[in-house]
Length: 374
Ligand SMILES: *Cc1c(COP(=O)(O)O)cnc(C)c1O
Image (cartoon, rainbow, N blue to C red; front, top):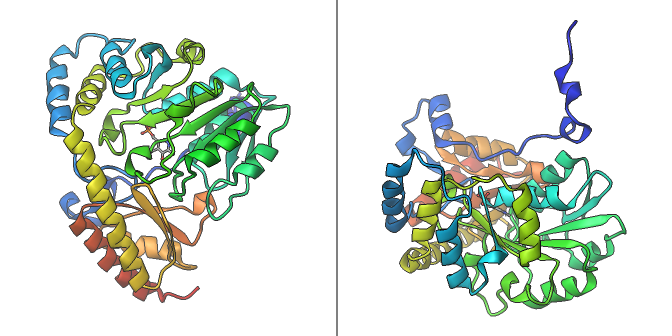
């Protein structure tokens, strides 16, 4: 008797399609017979500076303890975070990347009768963690590519348990200022958990820079998620963290796997928090790269979505997949976002100046090759 094992998966999981990551450099090198050194990856919002020297040194030192389990409470990292952000250690939860936290939060507060609200064009992980539980995802149409916060507040029903807000948002790079977030939170009943996903907050230093941390004391239903993957340059190590009330952190801690962040990751993340110079350079390289790409898009006559992240979504016309393919053939990996409902756009992560330049030249060639028609 043969069993259809796929049909044994729970309903939510059966209907799931996995997260599509950016294409790895080695994979493209194998496919095209290229030298990996000749390939540029601007596809996963990684930090183009390479890792911080301080983080590297701490990681190397941690290698000598590979036979030991990590500190399951992450004491050193939590105390460094508590000091830097002036919060209590009991408010911090560590995750294996902030993706881990997003999933833990959903598993703690959502069941199959619940609704979870997020925005159209928002981070793909929100619908995935929602659907895995078998809950109903409510995707609220975006406004000017960003979250329509009024519409999201109106989408709340008595079944809503959780709301995800990416601020700044990926893949659109849009952001809401502090006041807009506050008036949104004012409209949300206190028994609904709101996640402010601030994965890119370090890159955005405007007058109205939003900061979820400042809102925690007023909104006990708030969880602020951040990561070491982007501005801090430790994507490979998978470290994220959340700030919440100690009560919520206690709930998250029940579902969290006891050793979800490994010792090397803990050591490197703790060390990088002391590397202000690295963070400053990350911001500078990013701000300059954003300008460089915006200028190039304008010269090429391409619309783009103004971004405050370390990436930018550009409208390359009706043949975005052909443009993407042509870029791949030229050794440049960017990210198609058709899966986000943005079939005309490609998302490009900000690279070093010469990487951006290589991408711009390759893009011009690609557009010519596909005949820039709509
Ligand atoms: C990159 C990203 C994250 C962070 O993912 P990690 O798991 O911490 O690497 C979280 N949220 C958004 C919106 C992101 O783009």
